[in-house]
Amino acid sequence: MKLKFNLKVEKIFEKIINKPKIKRILESILEYDIGLYLHSIRVSILCIDIGVGKNFKDRELVQLGVSGILHDFGKVFVPIDILNKKKELRTENEQKILYSIPRRTFSILKNFECNFIRKVIIAHHEFYKTNSFPRKRNENGEFEMEHGRRKEEKKVEEFAQILSIANLFESALPDFHQSIQIGSQNKLILYIKDEFLGSQSNVNELISRI
Image (cartoon, rainbow, N blue to C red; front, side, top):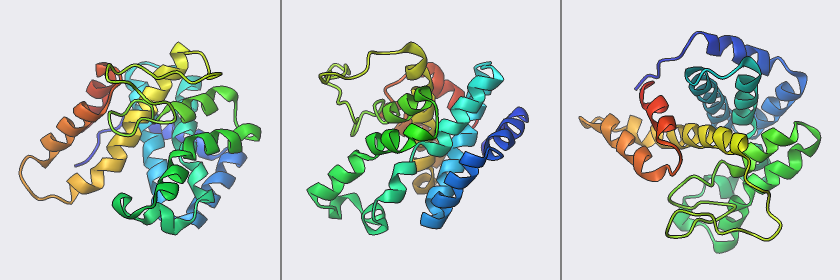
């Protein structure tokens, strides 16, 4: 299953990874776990490409790409054995630690990146049907508001949705890619359509690249 990328993506991605701060963060991620490193890169590239398909400006594409690289940075402060443990084998406390990663990343990046990118990152798990967090959704798909939480910002939500679907696809791809059954690609598409609670236009942008 090979994605089709716009040539502009390479130019934007190279611009991002040449930033000294981004280089240092990528080095930290690679030192922690090569799987997380490759995942962060692939999510970043896919975010940029979806943004290109939506005719985003170069500055916005950079913001999307940086969000993709940084979205799981908080994981490097979690013991690797917890991260690699199957969900059904984790304790309740270990699961809580993983659910806290978006908030943890938001806090860690206070001195690294602009507040907009931090908001995109903390929201990217809030568009999943299963395990929506930090905020939960009720049975109508609406957020259960927390006291003192940020007000909705249209652009943050738009970017967070793109990061969300790119992360969802990249996280699910290995399971479907390993399947040799005919129709595994269709199963992956159906899974994404069912799990993703964001805009259908983002689903369509992703599917057009598969």
